Image (cartoon, rainbow, N blue to C red; front, side, top):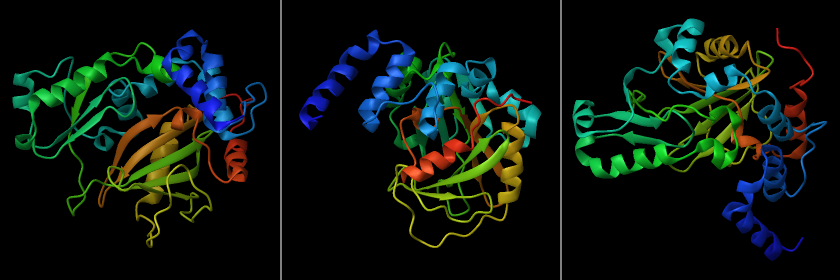
Length: 294
């Protein structure tokens, strides 16, 4: 199909057409627009296809709990202990002047009901409350389920969380370690470097050996050392993943401690494939959709 025609169809999709589609047809059409092929949702083989299948078929309370940034904290506490939770400063419906004044100089604000709605406050004195309030109100007005049809976010409370800002000993934002767990076992580790700058991304196996391939971002080319606490991170991830067919466990591996970031049901909303295509099929093969949870 000519590029110009597809651009028109994409504009129609994001303009109004997507609102008319069922969740299944939203997945089909957006997959085609993003990846230039129709997904096989009846007999999925690729990882992205299987994520679409999970979105449409694994509609469980556990999936919604995993997506709920606030409620999942109690569940994580029971699984691996409170010490691995990023300290929660406060949670609230609306960021008011008194709440703002009660917060420390550094912290992170995030929405409870979706991804990407996050603000890092390095120094409160250099921020404008009105601007931050406007952002948090925009988050609250966002129906994250309707935007991307990620079912697990449907109907979640639209609250704002304020958490402690984690920093390395050098005062930098720590790298993100995202452990892909299939049937309770870590099979792939994604590491994101400089997430809020010139983002790079590397892929590793559980032995922290590089995997040839990429996922959206170019690789980090500098030498990489295996974290000394990688085995502990794998144990934590597998403890949290035990009840899921697939889940991505996001962790922060600081010098002397590991913190839980979040659980991700649908990486990239199932529209971001591994490259090359062989890797997309290989990662997909790790997920057996016919296997019963134990």
